[in-house]
Image (tube, rainbow, N blue to C red):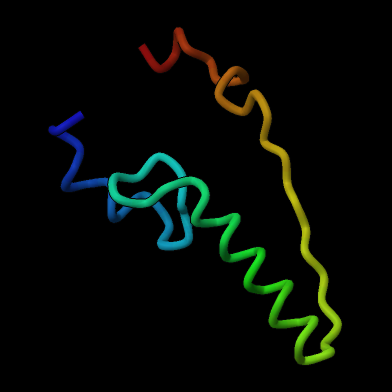
Length: 66
């Protein structure tokens, strides 16, 4: 994995919070919580969408990757 460290910043979006060194998955939960608090306090309307990518990695063609 160390061989790819130089490439990862070019491939992973700046808004990716999972699977990165130094950034915990719960950071995205904190952002959502702060957004809801802000919208509530400012009496603003908003929409939060949760997208579930369950088993996204299981749908890859592993033989092709290998």
